[in-house]
Image 1 (tube, one colour):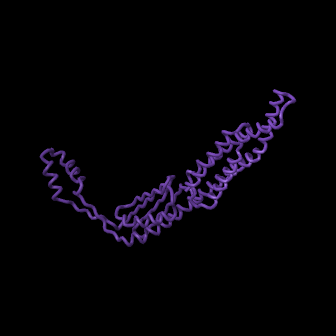
Image 2 (cartoon, rainbow, N blue to C red):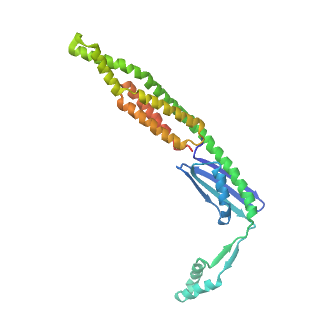
Image 3 (tube, rainbow, N blue to C red):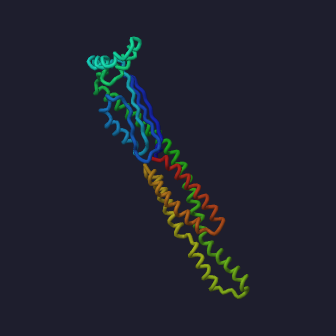
Amino acid sequence: MNSMTGYGYREIVEGQMQLSVEIKSVNSRYLDLNINMPSYLNFLESKIKEIINGVACRGLITVNIKVHNAQNNPKINVNKELFDSYKNAFQNLCTVESQFELTKYIMSQPGVIDTSFSYDSQEYEKLILPLVSSVAEIFASDRKREGQNLYIDLSKKLDVLKNCADFFKEWQPKMENIFKEQITRKFKELIQDYADERRIMEETAALLVKYTINEEIVRLQSHLEALKNEFQNNPSPGKKIDFICQEINREVNTIGSKNQFPEVGAIVVNAKDALENIREQARNVE
């Protein structure tokens, strides 16, 4: 089990080149990958995505790559023809004092200045991809560490739900005796010693049919076992956990709606509280 939140960072210096890679993530329903790097490195994007896909399948993941190469001096070219066209169009509107501002304005227009860099793509690939892989391992390890903490907490909440289900199962047989005692007492209050045992049993059976929670208990225990299996065996159980929790919530709500006893009501509240905690934490699980 992995968390969807994680962080990894490394920085290296190779000759005159300084490189840094940062990978961080937050919760997201799907895998959403954003890569921020200099445009001249765009040819590496598909390979970087492949590396990230190898360590994560959900989360909003941001990869920041920064490069500083002291030897990579830019080549600056000024389009003099375009510069003169702008100058001729506006200089008659300007005073002598504003000529400097006019020049600044012209230089900021698209196409007037062209800045280009020369670089060795193979050299960048040789340095950046291993660095991204190294940071991806740190990032994945951080998500795994946090995932273990989530697993411990979720397992505790699952134990609470199992205890609630066990209580419901133990309580179910007691309902027949309680209903029978209540009906017998009411009959005796009304007709004293003439209470018909057969009639008492019929009324008891009618109440049991209306308020029995046996089917809900069976389904609840099945869902809890499925949830345990997801925790232990599914490396990316986040979406499945949410679905199973919806099914568990349905059974707990039905048990609560059928309940006629304060003892059961208190356990229903405990079950709902534990389930809500699981659903909240599951939003952090990959």
